[in-house]
Amino acid sequence: MKGIYCLVIEIPKNMSTIVGKLGKIKFEKGYYTYVGSAQNNLEKRIERHFRKEKKKFWHIDYLLENPSVRIKEVLSKKANKEEECKIAREIEKFGIPIKNFGCSDCSCKSHLFKINDIKQLKSLFII
Ligand SMILES: [Zn+2]
Image (cartoon, rainbow, N blue to C red; front, side, top):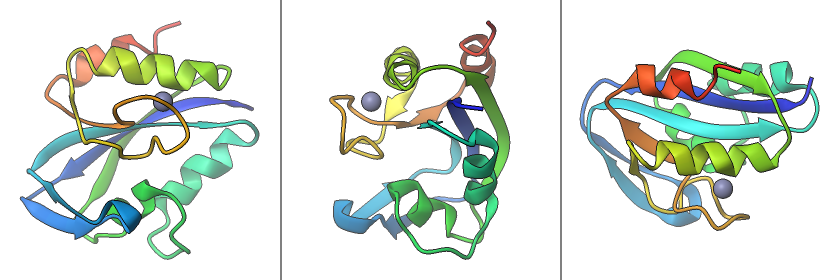
């Protein structure tokens, strides 16, 4: 299946971490969501995010490598790649973007947001 997904991520305490070329980023404790897409094998992509040990390739890999950072929930739906950025722009309306995170190849502010309202996020996944 090809599609888009949002990882709901919990950062249990304030921390800072090096995110590849973005350098050191401070994260306040709370919930975050990361928007991604997979043009083939969505399941495998999501499963990869859960693995702690892997070669770091995406910005999100640097964040998820931290042992205290957890994926709480995964929302996904069948969609074309264009939907990925549309969803990111919807989340921007209620989330705080972590500048330039996960969006090196598009014009979004970010694909990672700090969010307070998971319900609002879920409503974007009701087809
Ligand atoms: Zn984008």
